[in-house]
Length: 144
Image (cartoon, rainbow, N blue to C red; front, side, top):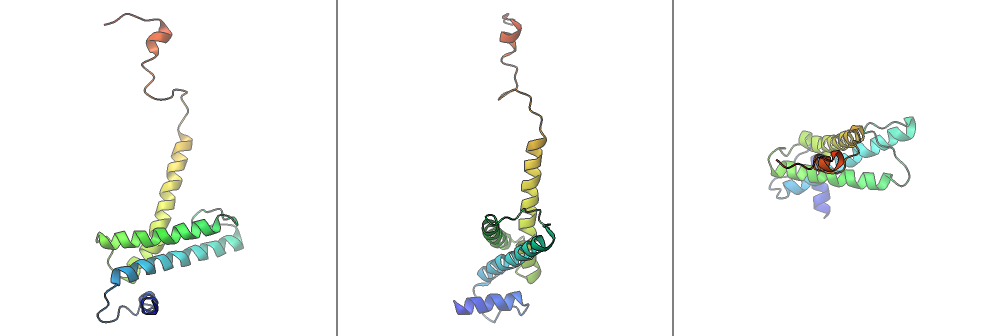
């Protein structure tokens, strides 16, 4: 375990991989999670000082830990799948992209989706197009 942590530290500090490293994907995944955590902690510090968040979070004492855990896990999973599907190459820049950029993009997508749901007008019709009940309302019972 100590060798793995040392390898992650070497990768994050731009020292690369040691010769014959077999766990490059796991090291990359862990590094994505760590960089995501660091970005989240910096955002939390900014929120503590200026009451504003770069990621538009409203931190409370109850929300800090779940946000931090979800962000870290999301960054690691995003980095893992990005590398597995060859979207990301194993590099420090790709690690920072997955660790910081991917969760930020996901939060933006979620925010856009919730805002779109709030903007849609309520038509009062539940389900369907509302055409099926027209004959009963108008009294039209003729069949074509």
